[in-house]
Image (cartoon, rainbow, N blue to C red):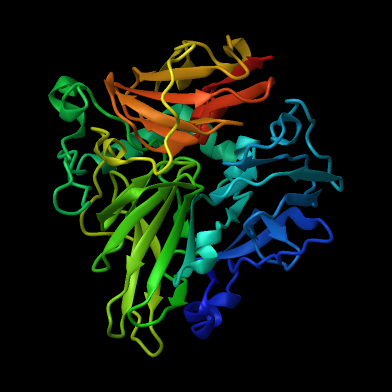
Length: 498
């Protein structure tokens, strides 16, 4: 999934531009609405055909890219045989266009077309069905809104869209997870995962990685005797741009070039580490929002989150795998950057060693600083959102309630609200708030000026506080982006009054 944006990129345009995930560039002039179809498609998963869903643009390829200042002007058509609705993750549309079933708009019927028109928020975002079993069938795609500096930068853009995939139906997957069988099998594989919570971090010299102690939180010893649950299902394949490492996308790049790697975790239930190996990198944005550059070669992201990583390629020719490692497990996926004529290495989908758990001590989150943080302001309200649940019975809650029995988190337009997510379960939860961007302002009670986001990962037995300025008076979704958790009740609403 590549898009070249400058003179160097245009000179190195290659077959990768014609790959299935080459996102078309929409022109600055936009006399008519863009077209997007929710439809079915067939993938080759290691030699086995798989019918999945997809979001296909007018050029017949997945996803969309908008230029700076371009409106989100779109006609969405449902070409599926079942109703659907699409959420524009990371965007802040009018509530009626947010894309949640019956909040307030109904699902699109088969054959129905719905128009969307709003100001697009810049950055690396994505779009997906807000019907959990459809997202698990890959009804999702990138949504990139470029900034003016993206046009000026002398760099090539590469997008890596991550998925987990099962040949079984989502209903069968959920049934197995809820029965506990899938969790038992995944837990056995996790027994070999590194105990060191810092084992996955490589963020350059001088970066403090003792995030929990620095941020005043409980140490890992405080979790002694408690078993973390990292993965509750082993999927059949892990995909980067619809492909496994058995047949990865090979992106042609220039010797000594600079890459902007846009990584989107569209997986249903998998946290990944992004490992650039020998290629030095800098994390420059999370969830589409710029952060002060953070050097390193390995960064993690939970479901729903995005990373923008600048990579500086070596001056000589070669091929460089960019890998996505499943946390707590051996499975991996990824793509390969290669100069013309370079020998492309054969990569196995299973690593020799298991990747560690992601950000148990919130060290990565604690290291991030927003380029344009919120203005200092005393909070008008500070609601506590308790995250709970367990594997057996498989029930996940917000404030000890499932969605059908929810008590909304309330606020008023214009207020500064600080939401404290307190996770008392033994699984991590990527918490996503619709209709707003927020800033991470505290970890385990210790204040700091962190990153702007729309999805924040809250590891087991931890507290993360986010601040936001309340927007449109409406009912907005607030939920865990782990799809089996969401489908089992872990969502509520952020009810805003005027």
